[in-house]
View (cartoon, rainbow over the protein chains, first blue to last red):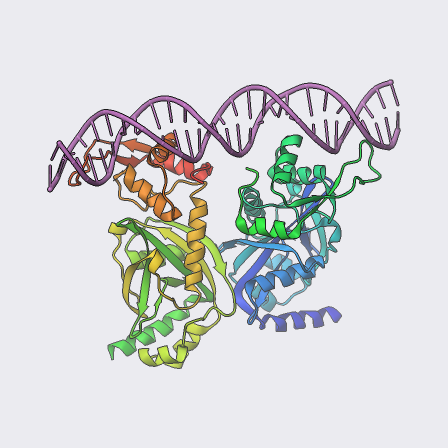
Length: 256
Length: 256
DNA sequence: ACAAAAGTGTTCCTACTACACCCATGA
DNA sequence: TCATGGGTGTAGTAGGAACACTTTTGT
């Protein structure tokens, strides 16, 4: 009964959105030396997909992406970047509408909305792992992080989206700094290096990496700390926000 | 009478397209040492804009872009690249619907369609200037090239689109070769250099430029020719298509 | 013969790469 | 005390940048 009410509300809500336009977000997080992506599992199924959303009639595209992301992660200020719009007619690989609707107990009306041909604008986000509260949405009952190299077969064309998001992120790394929104406020140089190595999928020289990073002048060194770890205690660093923003807009050539 | 019939056909045709989704193309050409963009002038007005189009319900986004472009330029095989999707609610700067509809003698029904909130996918194309037959569409009566640095104030957010298209093109130049579709089949090294200089907006060293270009192994030198010009006759070159395509997909680091 | 453009090669310097030793800490 | 990881500096090298003279052709 309660569920039925929700469905009605959902269908009603659809009128408020632009038809045929959707957004999907590849949300990158970093934890335990692993690059991770936030995925959702549909109710009553074992099918996973990217978090997404729709756009209100009077809402900017970027605002819609931020709104969706905020709902899924609880975060409001995040690095969010549009990277590609997916507009093929056939975007529904690995997806049996009939089956899913039956499992969800949804009327065909909803199904038609779901499978209506959408042009989907792809965004990727870089968020601080620890600050995220994964939250499922109406269609889904589980929301959790997946290691980037263990992503299962996803619904729709979402595997392609993640692949292209990662490719774009890697390229972005070559002309913009990264890390401000992926790392906690204070972090060590090895932390930062591990992040870069994980994104790029290759190891980097410790000394050269440090030289380069410091050379860009966007880092501030604090006191020694990093208590708790074994071995020699590494320094903690923090991004200088102003200089970081400037480097972002200047598109300085970075790691390549 | 004939006009009225066309309007009816136009309105009827709208049903075949995805609502709220459009595409716009920044078509770059190169002539007389100038980078140029193809613009359209609306009937009965002095308002210019980018060529664009809509997407059929069963048509891929890229296909729609190619189709629109083909209509405007007569070219079918062109380099076409999606670069950004423009999704702000307010994309209608410099545009008085009322006034324009009156001038065009169009019913309000058409006006509503025109000003309905669209998410527009931006593409840019690189075409060979000489091969293009600029062709106006239903709403426009003039279609011609404009020098990139003399673009007037355009309708909608089309000035922003051109700016971002050029920025993306410049960046693309740093990791992909350019020129295959912008230059005629045979061209001289100074031609190619002029193209690069025009796009980048800066002069380059003749010798270093030649060394680098030849170094990438995508050019074939032909016989001396380039008849007609004064002074020493430069060699003609041609792109090696296979190697060019490979360089495109490899994303080798190029001029930066 | 001269002016204007094109062909070609070398030197210089910067920036990235590779690499080794010492220090701090927990077990 | 030893193993592990972190802090730091230097030498080598490859590739981009700067640069000059000769050749061709039309006027």
